[in-house]
Image 1: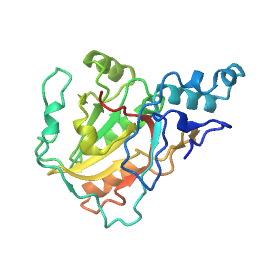
Image 2: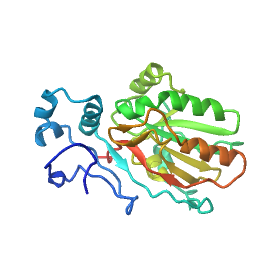
Image 3: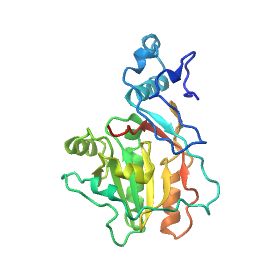
Image 4: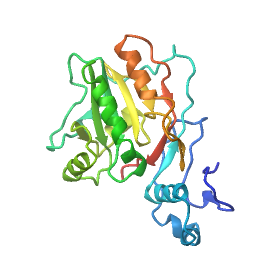
Length: 256
């Protein structure tokens, strides 16, 4: 199994931390790419030859921890993800930016709760800031509660606050250093979305839209807005159109 990048003759299996996950095994968690990637796999010569912007973005992502969480999109709208998550102690490890333990499911009168997994240093995640603002504003009055979730345990509350300010992101943000929400949401990369109904019923997890077809393959603009389509269905009381869609971004590294 290989990365779809313009490289030749590299043995990707030489480092078990570098993986691409197939659509036949969507539940295999991703692992971070080693920061010594460029040196170990001989990218230094390529970098000296003034690579194209797309190639530079791909190499940046690989060096910072990146990947594709491949999920088979279920074409049938009548097969939602119906996992009962009501009795999870993992939520006790979720914190607000004041450092207090926080249960984001303890919210009355909402139709859906959305978790958007983001990070401060992922280029793809940061480029979604305008779309995150748009989705937040569109559904804020429709009974949808949206939270940004930072899963990197090394990212401090102050760093998150600066990130929110710099990218003009919504202020509702949580820290998930033990990956309680990551596991409940079946998230593997940033950015990635998870939509829950009341009762902690996961009905969608995956990409925000199809702007990124693959690493280094970005459309001028998205042609399918997956998260928006799911939320439209939820607020109008209709079945979600699909339970999952492949997300492209930076790997959420396993908790050490």
